[in-house]
Image (spheres, one colour):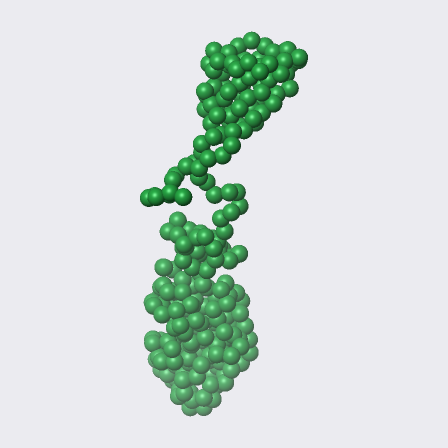
Length: 259
């Protein structure tokens, strides 16, 4: 029991080492020492004088005079009596850490005391998905594009089977790119591709009538502040009837650029 601050030192028993002697002056210590004063050396039960009868540094013990094979020699490690308090080997686990973030096999501890994805970086989460077959969209109707085939998805943030949406889950700025191709949407047709955020139109990219072009695309930067925000791509065409979206050049992808 003690009063006040916990002591910075703890105590342990002295360690002893027996040597197998021979006609030599050089021996190896089991424990490293700073100098001869950290050892009490005995030859034939007679204590030797440090720095005069022997010197020591690290795990090297050097005698002034060689021993013989019949000598009995041992030492007591005086420096082992007092030591700084260190956790036992393998005694510290993730439960003892104060770091924030997810502690698991896929993360590592950063210098700012947070856990981050081991294989990630500022460019993840990221994904790319495409349309696998024609998708019909009605005239003058904003229709969600069903990018149903993933080319990659680093953090499982894109839903390619139900809602066809990107939910980053990590705050930051992202580059978002989409391209949509509509059949028979040429010279006289208004053609719109839109980004929807949480179900509402965020940005639109328009191909005006008079252009003989059935491909419309976009690249923009979005600022994700809420980890539950989600993003979808909608297309609208004004050809006067239903037209199919074509798989060729119809894709959706995003990647994080800034924390």
